[in-house]
Image (cartoon, rainbow, N blue to C red; front, top):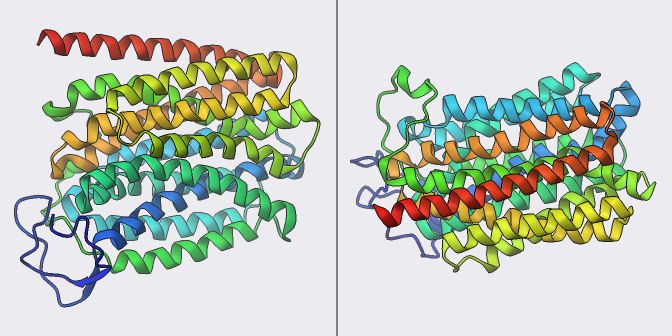
Amino acid sequence: MTQNRGTAQLAPARADLPIPARAGRAPATRRRRLTGQAALYLLASLVVSLLAASAAPTPLYAIYQRMWGFTPITITIVFGVYAVAVLIALLTLGRLSDSIGRRPVLLGALGVQILSMVVYATAGGVGELMAARIIQGLATGAALGAIGAGMLDVDRERGALANALSPGLGTGSGAIISALFVQFLPAPTHLIYFALVGVFAAQTIGVALLRETVTPVPVTRAVFVPEVRLPRAVRGRVLAAAPVLFAVWALAGLYAALGPSIVAALTGNQSVVLGSASVTALTVTAVSSVYLLRNVPARTVLVWGIAGLVAGVAITLVALGAGSVALFFVGTAVSGIGFGAGFQGGIRTVVPLAAPHERAGVLSLLFVVSYLGMGVPAVAAGFGATDGLGLLGAARVYGLALIVLAALALAGLRRTRAVRALA
């Protein structure tokens, strides 16, 4: 693509520019459109803001719990329904942007996301909180595949890196910024959501200016039917990456759902900023590892991700046994390396091999695996925390299960490598 590494920020849409999507070109227009780096940064910022918004309620769960009197099971169920809604949207809407274009899907998703922020801000009980999570999950799931594919349309190499960097940036920044709002600003259960409405409104204007990279085609009913069929070019790579993605996002799910509660149990301090620091510590090291390992071969990065996950979780288990919050944060930081490396390795292993018109569908499937890992084990941990194990006991069992998952992922990675060698 001629604009991939250019510095042009706004450029007239031209019919002679190659469009890395279906055969043909998006209709020419005289309107000025965002292209090149500007488009890539805008799309990456969408992932950051969407996942920041998904993490924004994390510091508020303790406040909601005091207001409405629910148990840790309810917290993880509220967290889990979001993951389920994301999965439903990924499976039913994940390929839609390959047919109607990236921009229409993103505009619709941002509108629904704004609606979810309003429901959060006006919630008066657990029912409204769950409704907000469901609406938010549907919007996020619909957008993720389109955003990821759009970044690859702009620049395949930088787009793959941005796909790996953005989720960690969003999850970490959302938790800590929300905690700062809660700790130091008025109206803790309202203000952060209204601030996010402003962010999404500004991004909607930006998306309206994006140059479309897909030639629209008629939408058939089959587009909305959940499909697990993979393009032949990426099947082996997905088999290698999927177990790693599941494992690292299961780790992220534990921190997003129960991280602040674990910190409070270890320290006896109810500070929402301190509690959210566990999520931020995980994602800061994750993002750092993604950037530092960007030029390392993808399969090597996957192996390092598994090693980081095992080492970090092992340190965390020792910390939980000793009741040491300092060691807990050390384990969290090491685990973050595993999270970032594992996720980056998975994306880079699979996505570059997908054809342009297959990118949104392939990315959506990878996010399905990731959100299954994030949601299902976290809900199980919530039940364990209430059903006799206690919070720290459930976290220990969860940690041991993660180590087993990582071992299985490594075995799967070695097996797919051996199969490819024999092919």
